[in-house]
Image (cartoon, rainbow, N blue to C red; front, side, top):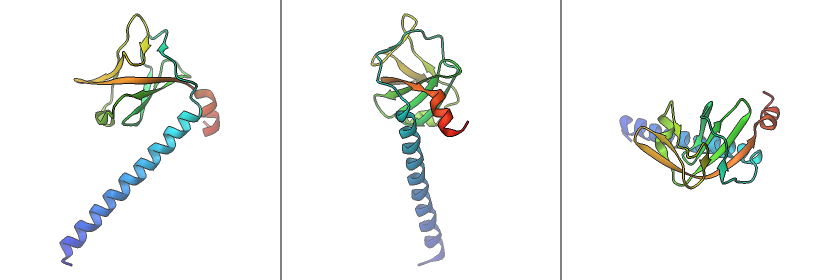
Length: 130
């Protein structure tokens, strides 16, 4: 095999391995948040905005509405643009966020929220040793 083809093959295989590692990390992180997530709720009643947020994968985001008040949001469809965002918005109506009506928004993209689950973030942090 010519050297340049061998080099390209190694790069391709390394890229595939990297994607597999990322998928495993995302799956493990999602499992951790799901372990500490409560039953789905239809609405976050009092919503004044996001203190911070974290993308788990293209279909799951955690938002914090207070120091230890976290919510695991499941998105209706994959939202790959999230991986490249520094800021997001969450639509709201009547001072709350509803599953199936509201969405995560960034730029011109809108990713509808399918599920909202409260996360016992204090317990999760305790397990992580933070």
